Image 1 (cartoon, rainbow, N blue to C red):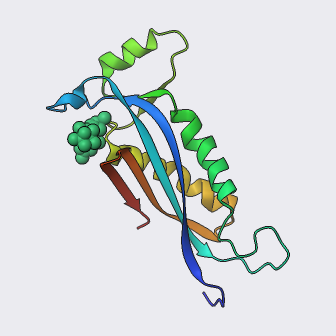
Image 2: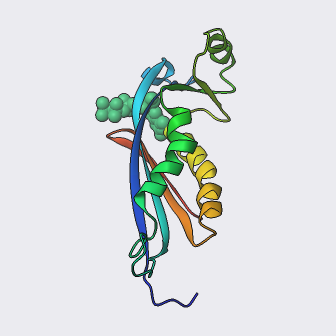
Length: 154
Ligand SMILES: Nc1nc2c(c(=O)[nH]1)N=C([C@H](O)[C@H](O)COP(=O)(O)OP(=O)(O)OP(=O)(O)O)CN2
Ligand SMILES: [Zn+2]
């Protein structure tokens, strides 16, 4: 690619609350509990050179990152219980609760697997919405202030 504009990365952070458990954990995490998760979404692209336009000087308006992340991750996962499909007894129990917000995950909801799921969901969203002129380069997901996982663009 030939460009006079710098390529750089920007990050938007959003937070949400979810319940989960790690069913085979050998400690406290096998119990039903919750976290205030924080997701940091990093996009890499060319800084727009559009004098007089709203996006001049931006890789992408932070508001656009927020809108799409809210639609695809925060709104579906906030105040939901994230349960692994293999956690069959709990899936069945949650199904008995009227109108309960449950998200059945392909894999055990460790922070690693949740970060990977978020990356898999968001990567095509940003790529399609912005015609490939920027890419999702990293998701960092905090499960607690002290524990997080990073997924990087390969
Ligand atoms: N590699 C992983 N290890 C653990 C995960 C995980 O997703 N990936 N998850 C948990 C628990 O669900 C919990 O989120 C972490 O508990 P804990 O280690 O107690 O973390 P804290 O930040 O609350 O610990 P403090 O000691 O209070 O700082 C466990 N392991
Ligand atoms: Zn936990």
